[in-house]
Amino acid sequence: WSLEEMRYATDEWTLASDSGLLLYLKQFSENLILKTKEVDSEMDQLVYAIKATDVSVRNTFNEFNMLSHGQFVENRVYDEDVTEVVEEGKEENTESQEELNFSQREAIFIPKYQDALNNGLAVLQQSLLMKDEFDFDNEPKDEYSKFPLPFVIGTKQFKEED
Image (cartoon, rainbow, N blue to C red; front, side, top):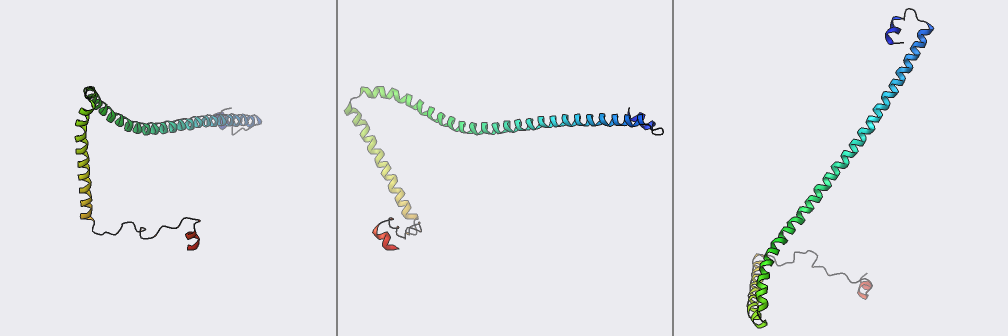
């Protein structure tokens, strides 16, 4: 029975009308259960898609983190490539230096080392002079430096201190 038929048969309601209503309600119930299962299935698929999207987003964040680490390494490699170019230029010089004997190399390198040491000492002295100029209070900046260190545990002084 359809709903329209039952509506028109309300004036003459019979036992057949009751069985028709029962059949209609059973079909409605089965249809409702079927639709509920479909919605449940679609919800499961939606949850699965959301979890897959979550994993994809997390993978993307991880790839960005890895890319940022990779860029740092690439920059470092780029810097090393520059030194390799310089080292290639040095290789040509080393071939000519290999032709020089020990005394000639000594005559070339000793003045360079002396000059480098003198420049380093001059910079060190300037930094010490600048520190003295700007250091108005000669007290140590560490507030705990005025206290003595504790005695080593287990020594005679440690036991006597208590």
